[in-house]
Length: 275
Length: 275
Image (cartoon, rainbow over all chains, first blue to last red; front, side, top):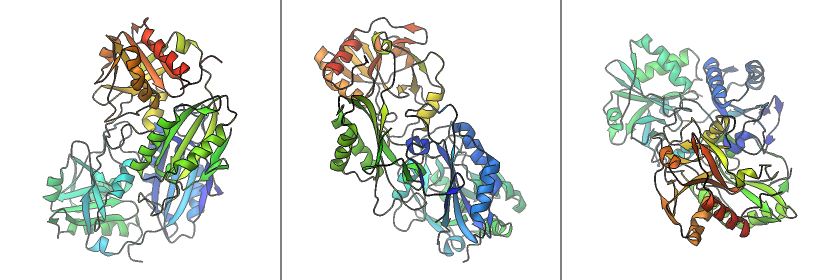
């Protein structure tokens, strides 16, 4: 595996990095296809928003150069980009002149069966609930214990699990966003209080009109999702997986899901799922 | 500064440690006084609880040996002990056979003026609110963005800042727990939904009866705290600071606070604040 830390091949970083001490970091998981970083502009925008909220300095030009260098000649891979606050003193006080740490690591593209895209996946519901934190909602920051715990709660046969908030509203899934399709509407929950605003979610919302779909953001319960015509999950590595099963509900209609998936592949915003 | 990583002098750790990737770690900040780790049993207990929840393996005997070795000959210092989940693959899934990382770093004891203990400190109220997360409440885990943001919101003249939950109840302060004294009662908020259950808080609650104080856990508003006879903050590095000012309220009575502080010093659970 290749890792670049502040532009140099390395595997180690400071034990006093505030990314490690407090999770003071933001990160992106970027699909690499034929030497290109997919949806790079959206990833960079989200990094910039997160760095602004967390006070992490970000030099976009240097970062883009490093991304270009690490992904060249990569046919199909996943790049994780982490920007952390870097080394500071003990205690929560930010350093006066922070020097952020850039960590780029290149990973194999995950080996999911093509049936996940074609026939859909089985969705469960995680036991842990997401808290409301409007100051951090939407960002992909380094405080991800809820997702780690949710992942450990997946049951055999599940490919993903919904995450609800403390009030029982559906927010997202462990590592993807959730959409339902009903009567020509593409519906997804608000991420103003919890959840990660995925770049694939953002892309799909911007493209929905091409299929005559209007986009609606509204609170979703598991009951509403069970009653939907179609349900799918999105993230920037897989693109989009239709859901074939949630609890006892079986979904057989994936028409819109597959139209959107084909668009993503045609527009090269994700690698093709066929190896 | 001395840093031990898994028992060896080192300053670097893996860039793929899940402590850095997701904040999957727990930590303790331990006062060192005359070669002893103060309140060590309570710190170890909290580490053990946190490791249990986060799935981090913990070998107490090895950890205690390493603590003993790093603090020997230290007259007055602060030791941070971090236990992280160690290196795993990309993604939230825990490694099958996790190898935790132990990071021990020794820091100078902070240089606070003795007036903080004797005359008390000025307390503000942070703007950011704490979310409710019963699955993690009480633990000192590595997801500490709220505290980092709260610390950045301290205004000039503040020595600490209260943290409220989304409903406006007082939970704790940025890096300490909060107590009020009223009519022979020592009152502190519940930490079942948010906050860090400090070891100094635990110690003080166990000692209160020595001064005829009963201990009560109940929801506290800033109004209630302003109306209290005495208010103080606790953590394991400073022990206890009386509060002399919150908003427009000035507190002149620190009798109980100073009795408890003297007990902590007498029982050697904190270093003496005089240098």
